[in-house]
Length: 179
Image 1: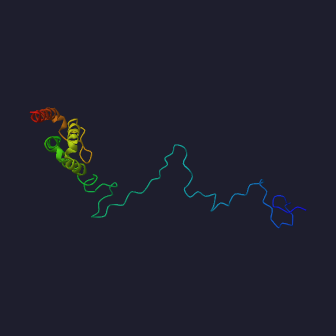
Image 2: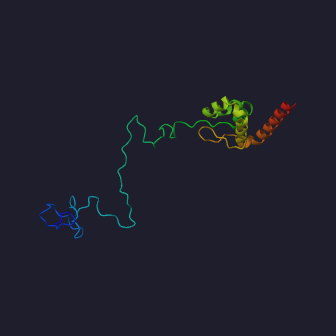
Image 3: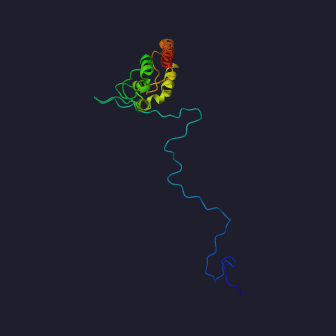
C-alpha cells in the first residue's frame, strides 16, 4: 500500500485529513456590493456634447480695509512685479570700461552682480589673462548679461567705439611689451 500524498490522494480521502483545493475554473465570483444609492447623481446630469463644463462661481468678497488684494504667487502687492521694484539695468559702457581696465581683477563681474565668479577671477588674475580676454570678447559681442539675465543698456549705440578703442588698447599693450 502506498503512502498517501496531497496530489495523489482522492479529494474525499479521509486518510490524509486535508481539504481539497477549490476548482481552478468555474463561475467568477459576484461583484462587491456598491456603496450608497446608485440611482442618484449629486452633481446633476453630465453636460451634453459642446456645452460649457464650468459652473458659475460667486464673486470674491470685497477686500478688508488695510489688506492688499489677492496677487499672483511671488508678486508683491505694492509693485505687481516679482521681488519688488525693477532693478536698474546695468550700463554697457561702465561694464566695458571696467572689463577693459580692471577686468583682470573681476571688477566687471562685481559690477554685474556676479560676485562668485568675480572672486574666482580676482584670485586667478583673470584666469592668467585668458578669462579676461574671453569676458572682453563676450562683452563686445553683446552677449554679456547681468545677474538677473538682463541685457546691458547702450550696447547698440556704443559698440563701434568700444571695438575700436579695445583694439587700439590691446595693440598698444602688445607694442609696449615687445619694445
